[in-house]
Length: 350
Ligand SMILES: Cc1cc2nc3c(=O)[nH]c(=O)nc-3n(C[C@H](O)[C@H](O)[C@H](O)COP(=O)(O)OP(=O)(O)OC[C@H]3O[C@@H](n4cnc5c(N)ncnc54)[C@H](O)[C@@H]3O)c2cc1C
Image 1 (spheres, rainbow, N blue to C red):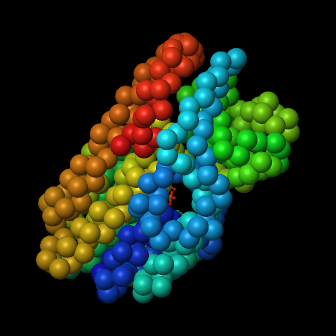
Image 2: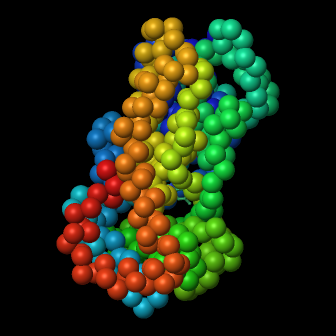
């Protein structure tokens, strides 16, 4: 019998696995894909907080450091400088780094196995995957925006979601500046250019609309060529009503621990993973796996840290996109006058 079974070996699941396995508990990671980090689903742009949350981060995962952002809407542009650096990470390598640490601390993994369903027993869940059955005292849903764990335990919330696609292109880029393109191709989200160096950048776009044709148009406008996407994923956000059930916790995108304005989820996932792992360790010591226990020790704790950042993000999103291009245009005409104030804002809305 496993103490904890974690569905999803990405940033959130791997981090929970590492912290719990490090304390000697039996941890199982179940991942539907065979290769950790692939298919690629993220740009890997994070705030300086990554170094506080993951002091052990292998520097080779950091592809670039940026400290300027240019906001672009039609013929309007303004630039902000960040007081703290932002890092561009090699996202597949980050997932692999976290996975390897979990395994090094004793976690077991089943790759290429899709989690399907559970059966409840008095002292555990029996977990059924595409090719196996496992017993675990606690089940963690770190299985992303369309979490099957959330669906099974009635924790899943239907929300609008955005599809993001991205590719890596050659060209001439300013190494320390990201570009954020609003309106036109991504009326409800934005397009981005995130440099890896002067010659290569990750160029992508997210929208609820026809993402592929908008991505094509965006690439043609920005880099004058089309390159097939090498990265794609879902961005879904909001404030989840409940992220726990008896013997169950959701973490990361599965719990919508995502910044509503930028769609960034790495930092929030790492914050919540740590809290989830601490709650799990406490539950294993006390032998208490009730919903109430996880509400008190996980849900309350992560919401203490992330409710306001998520609420702020939702509010700013509403203001910014509320009237579509009319409001975007309005904000672009006044925001440059508040440059100094904006530069003091925390990009994690913390
Ligand atoms: C295009 C794009 C760009 C992004 N850029 C950034 C960025 O620059 N910075 C940032 O901070 N965030 C970014 N994000 C968001 C970020 O990728 C996510 O917030 C982050 O990956 C969440 O990690 P997670 O571990 O919660 O979930 P995920 O990374 O989604 O991982 C879920 C894992 O569960 C597995 N899984 C799912 N279902 C099952 C199942 N039934 N059985 C077994 N395994 C299963 C999946 O294969 C996957 O490995 C971006 C997202 C997109 C779509």
